[in-house]
Amino acid sequence: MKFYRYILAAVLASTFVFSAQAADWSKVRIGVEGAYPPFSEMTPDGELIGFDIDIANALCEAIGAECDLVPQDWDGIIPALLAKKYDAIVASMSITEERKEKVAFTNKYYQTPAKFAKPKSMDVEVTAEGLAGKTVGVQRATTHDNFITEEFPDAEISRYATQDEAYLDAVSGRVDLLLADSVAMQDGFLRSEQGADWEFVGPGFTDPKYFGDGAGIAVRKEDTDLVDLLNKAIDDIRASGKYDEIASKYFDFDVYGG
Image 1 (cartoon, rainbow, N blue to C red):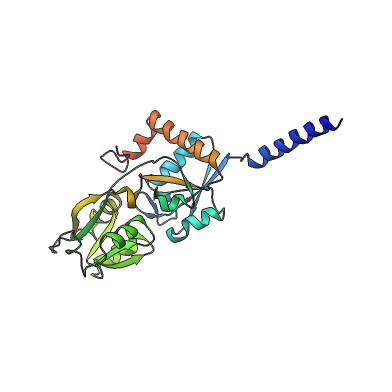
Image 2: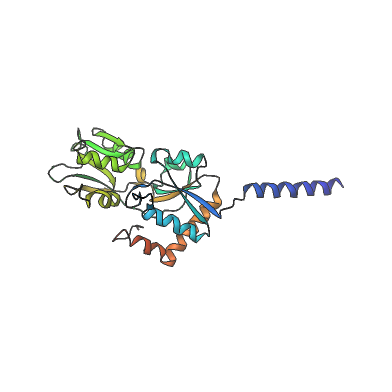
């Protein structure tokens, strides 16, 4: 009798553990930034649009989940995930070793290089010596912030909560150069009226030490089943052509990368 009681207790215990671990992903809350065009931005009437937004909705559709988009400032985007304000982050977040200490990542869903931009009237070389004493605008707590801090120690760094704030200071002459994702800066600034007098300078940067293995979706470490679902969804939308359909709305090149 004791043996059967033991077996029954073991079965009930394993069932409880499984039930506690199994999550219902029929609705997925996704943290987005909403201030990083063309990947994510808020229209004047409060609608979220952009590549990241379309990708998030497509991934939810692929796993059969309702998608709840939650805008969040970049500075607090990982803490809010860990506090369970949402379940995943789709916000052009580079997959880096430092971030992996706090969160789990899916495979990449795109990869583009970082670049500097300068006023067309300025002559400058993108070297440690060339940027010494120059003020560079960068979004705070990003891979670009880490990169310039380490690789260009003699540059003066102005850090901003959003990329748009950096653009505004560039136009007003408060910074000499900008550093950001090349696609985001091209579409969000250089092609705009306010950025007409600015241009890229120097090479593109993709050093995995700083920029990781592309942009991935961040998830809490314990939610391994959600990582698996999202990885499969990324594969599915690429295989079905949905990914290319979305990308073609924003880019005229392969944003996924090699």
